[in-house]
Image (cartoon, rainbow, N blue to C red; front, side, top):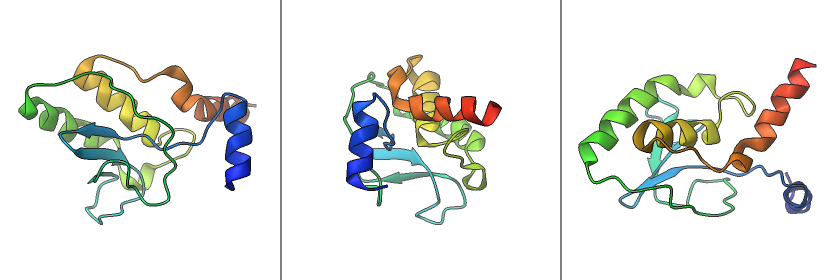
Amino acid sequence: MQAQSLQKLSNLGLGLYHSGVEINGVEYAYGGDPNNSGTGVFQNAPLSVANATYYQSYLIGTVKDINKVYEVLNVTKLEFKANEYSLIHKNCNHFAEEFCMQLLGKALPSYINRLARMGTWVSFL
């Protein structure tokens, strides 16, 4: 999508942005499989996923137990396989929200995946 189209969506309170979860200088995200790891969940340097558009960073919370992070990540990975990626039903925003909910009990701001939710309405019709 061109930058002008993205700006128009943003002006409407919609956006097509990438979400990841940064922990200790590593971004965990979901998408195509850029590292060929066999899973749709991958890790990268923060804010550096190729072809991703970032909008803003948020502090959702903090975790002191790194073992808990890896336990939750390993369980969440099972739900987000590379071949199941869908812009509307299972995207990087869905992953980030699920990971944060399981890890911190906190959801992402509701507008982050608004465009995908609207897409489910269209596919329903």
